[in-house]
Amino acid sequence: MLNIKPDTEVSSAQAEADIDAYLALRAIPGYTPHNAEHSIAAADAAYNELRSAEEDVVLAENALAAARDAVMDARRALRNVMIGAKNEIRVIYGLNSNELASLGIKKKSDHARHASPVRKSATTPDAG
Image (cartoon, rainbow, N blue to C red; front, side, top):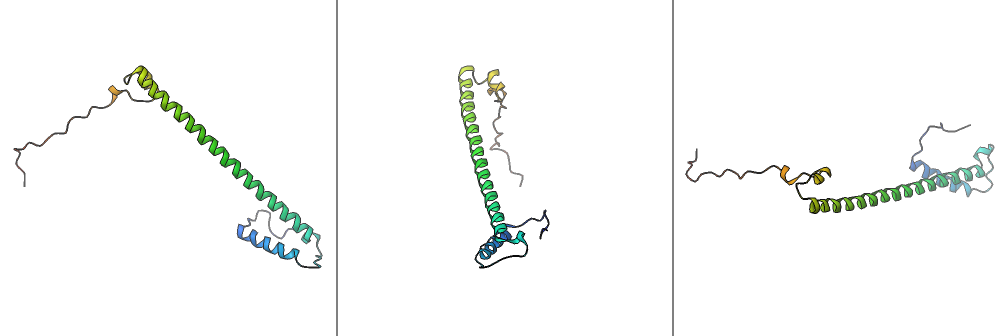
């Protein structure tokens, strides 16, 4: 019979307290429970299962971090190649080429022309 429901979440603080209690239980001489499910052997098995599961989590997190690093390295490599290729297209085909536009870069001729700002005349009286 279970002492807690199967869907009960155990916090890390509760788990640490259980580990401390487990270690203390192992130090009690002559402990012989009436129920074998509460024996030191059962506690050893549960503790070892916990440590194994925690190790699996660490290994999975390390694998995830390595996979993320590999993705970032691949993104950098592609970015480096594409920046170089865009510069090559600019040099080979020119700043107004359709080839440049096909890479998602505006042609120089498509950029809006900025008019000079209107200057105030020196003879305009202040409306003050």
